Amino acid sequence: MASLIDPNILLPTYTLLSGLFSPVSNTASTAQTPSTSIAARTQVSISSLGQLLSALDSFQSTLQSLYSTWQSMQPVANSSNSSVATAYSSSATTNGNYTISVNSLAQSQTLQSNGYASTGSVIGSGSLTVQTGTVSGTTFTSDGSTPATISIANGTLAGIANAINTSGSSINATIVSDASNLYHLVLASNSPGSSKGFTVASSGDAALANFAWTPASPGSMTLTQQGSNASFSVNSVASSYAGNTGIGIGNGLYLNLAGTGSTQISVATSLGSVSDSAQQFVSAFNALQTSINALIGTNIQTGVTGGLRSDPIANRLVGDLNHMALGSFSNGSSSLTSLLQIGIDFQFPQSYGLGGTLTLNSGGLQLAFGSDTNGTVGLIRTAAQSFYNLSNSYSNFGTGSIPLTLTALNKQLATENVLNRPAQGTLPGSIASLLISQASTAKGGGLTAQQLYAMMQYASIYALSSPYSVQSALIGNIASLPSASGSRSGNTVNAVA
View 1 (cartoon, rainbow, N blue to C red):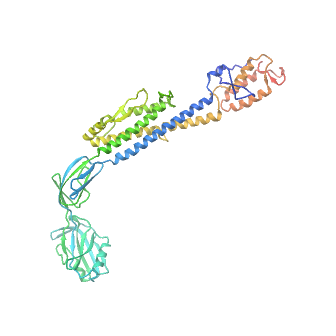
View 2 (cartoon, rainbow, N blue to C red):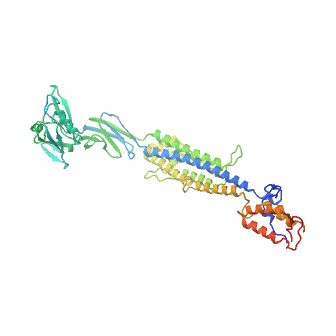
View 3 (cartoon, rainbow, N blue to C red):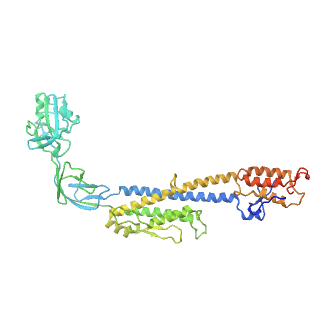
């Protein structure tokens, strides 16, 4: 009885001995694809997905750069008279115009001693104690801080000034000369403001008392400047501040006062910088879509079809990008929620299933920018973040669908290269054709010993990948061999009972 082998499931036939792995023609083989073709298609998929991953990486890099720019993008404040005041803004600043009038700058309390013949004049040793607080008329109110005690060892005028400046206290000392070439010790608060006044007490040599001062008992020290706050107005609203810099006036805008008088502060975001960034976004999107279209479409001139024409990942990605470009975004309280509203128009592809492109309408962008500057910038920033997140869901090396697919394909390719086997569940043509040949051979025909040995060696290798197919075929044929009493002729073994 001959074994039953269905020739319709066989791969191309291979001859034994004269070329175990060389294909020969048979009718059954023409409907099958060799493993080398499978490997080639796998390599094309790997290469094409690699190109897609590279295009996504370039797109995401551009978005990251632009997002950082948009995050730091903020309105610029300009002053019409910088000798009166300048201003700077934060990201929370809104566009607007402000009239600033400065009545007086903040001042630091200053005391001046009597004149001395030289900076080396010996005065005395001991200590000076400084207490900070508010001076009002002849009244002093301490701010509750711990007094600073300054030791005076070198009791010259220069030595006293040096001791004060190296003490880390809240005052500083300078020595100035007058028209009579007399030298005065000048003490001043490190910070301006009415609450940054100070008193000085002395101990030790009696001459140090020349530097002691309180508003009620000034001694020989003269109050040349009382500590005071800056007085100014913003759009006719009066205000004061214990300092001249970093004065917050609301909406993220800060003033630096320089002198008395008036100035106009205008705050506006640069349309040019927004337009440049928007164009970079549009160009990056179009470059990505062009790359994807080349991978999933057919070149009209050459007729060449991209390597991902039927790939579900690439086709889903281009659909997601088109959908997002046409969709809406959450943009806070702004009514600007779609790219079309800020002049970024979507152009549909010429063929269904391909990726569309974007164009920047400068007039539309300018109109949106003029009516809602923060909303325009916010929408571009939000869109960039959304496109980045979408791309990352495909390209992320931990969870992205493209890297995961590439890993699987590379493993598949490695397996195919190692085994170089036909499709699972079928027999190599060299074994199958030989068995079929034996099944149709007249009784008395058979396999030579050399053929049987070669077939067994080949089958043992192939059995690693398709053990059951090989075992079934061989067992079926062995069962059909003649019994021990059957005839054997030469070096052949009958395969037909």
